[in-house]
Image 1 (cartoon, rainbow, N blue to C red):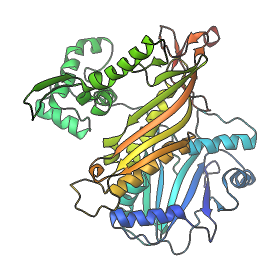
Image 2 (cartoon, helix red, strand yellow):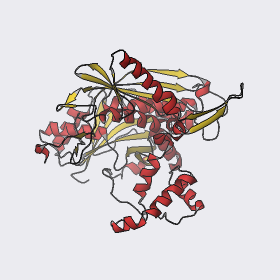
Image 3 (cartoon, one colour):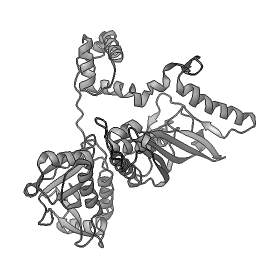
Image 4 (cartoon, rainbow, N blue to C red):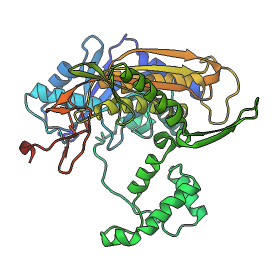
Length: 467
């Protein structure tokens, strides 16, 4: 094995209950009809940093191992003789590996030397051993449906004998490669196929608008040295920005309806502006009429801000991830809570310090025994995936979930409600400026830390020290 690529495996000591392994075995049987037998779960770390055998052992035992619960295996894959299959779950290139980064910080502290934070040296993975020998298709189905998310994870599966010849793949940064997508001149049928094949989820009218826009600026692009057609990155940005999830087209639409009892016809120009934004504006108007300027900022930044006292602001963000969680419970929930954490960090010019997460989750009956619709997931599977997604995205990122609520009702069987909330605090003033005002000027610097507890993606005034 490459001396600069080592492995550390943490596995439970004999006699210790493997709760995660039991959960995987039960979920595989309940949701996928797969009989795995016993499942052994282990943590795996690939270390791509030159350390001696003694340093590797001491780092593993002093920084990673719980001496009461874990045994440590170095540069080998230890498992019981009864296991016949394995599944390895790791992060895809370009996906942040929080656990690996934390382990790397610990290694730097242990060695008493700074490690280059722009290069990842330790990668975390999960390795599962299954008692029964399952075909690769079943192993991959189990991995993709219950153990990870294809958007952020890669999977390796196979018979146990194959693990002996396994060479660790570290993962790491994504390649900065873009491809040009022929768009100008496409027919309606071709536009719809392009949207469907690439999961843009844009309808024909929207795809026509994108095509016509690039047609109209073709000469300008060529004059600027750009290709006439857009890149896949450009189209992905447009599709995401214009999606129902980001743009909320239904909430912003003009809705015409008729009262079935009275026959009276109504028109609502944007449910959001009429019943959400205007309602909050009316509350703010009444407060200010009584001399109360408690509400500082709402609907104009990534999160809302209210006054705590003359020195501090409470920053609050709540959003739902209902449809994403119905389709992919784990992925939908984890992106919900992480997006909720992101927005207070990017509020104002300094970003807020995260305090806590909270949630309200509504699911169908977990004991539901009726007939499911095509592609409908069982309510219990949605419940288990959402709960784990919020746990992994919140608590394991260092932001504690302090309270929450769970509601079970048959009416949520088709689509759950997944409300995620994040509270944070921000100083009223930053560098002599109102922290909540985001006035972006030319020559401002954008600060995006790559490590440490200070996290923000906001702008700050240019300083001579940064020049």
